[in-house]
Image 1 (cartoon, rainbow, N blue to C red):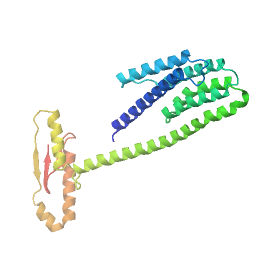
Image 2 (image 1 turned 90 degrees about the vertical axis):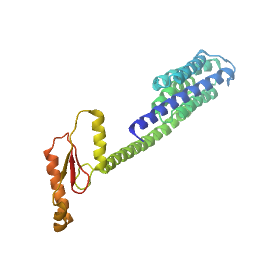
Image 3 (image 1 turned 90 degrees about the horizontal axis):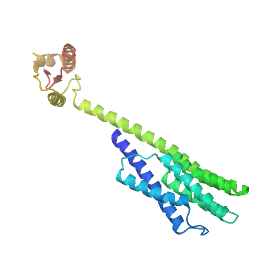
Image 4 (image 1 turned 60 degrees about the vertical axis):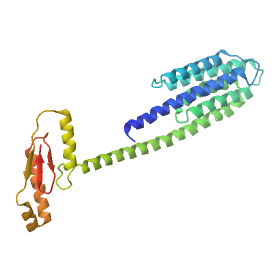
Length: 272
């Protein structure tokens, strides 16, 4: 997984959450119009607006999926419409209103909990207007029960967000570490471990890149260390390795920064 695929994953998560929210609002509002729980009034303007807005936004987001809709704004708008619907219907019912208000509040909390299980801001904006409307319409002795119904999912979603953020931070750190180790392995696979110069694979990679970017003439210098085998046999491999390291460092310091220095075989060095 790369940083680009990580961002794409979050973009898809955002889109799915928005579509689920709009779909649940469309279904709930449609059922409220077709088969209302209390038949004292079937049609309310805010409920009809929720049906129309959710349907239009679903179609619009389906046709232009890359367009980003602001979820907090939509959540607050739908929450205010639901609160308007609850107040309108509760005013037409004979007291007490507790049964209807509790069912209405739980229905709104149900939508927010499913659609925004990882977005506490959107959940709060969507549920808070209906919660305040239910408190206003309910008797004082019912406030504690309604507050409990409202605060319980908020506490659960908050804890879920904390756990998810820690999990995401761990995953992101692990991904960064793996990417760093992969880059390190790629560098090592193209570098000679003794001298730090490019090996055959590294030289081929740099030449391909250089020729693709620049079509001008380039020059290659092949250097061979005289009597290196005799020196290595006489003084041993450790001294031979030290000689190669010193010679490689001297050549690398003598050339320009854009020049390429590579070690192809034991005692042959290339400069390009």
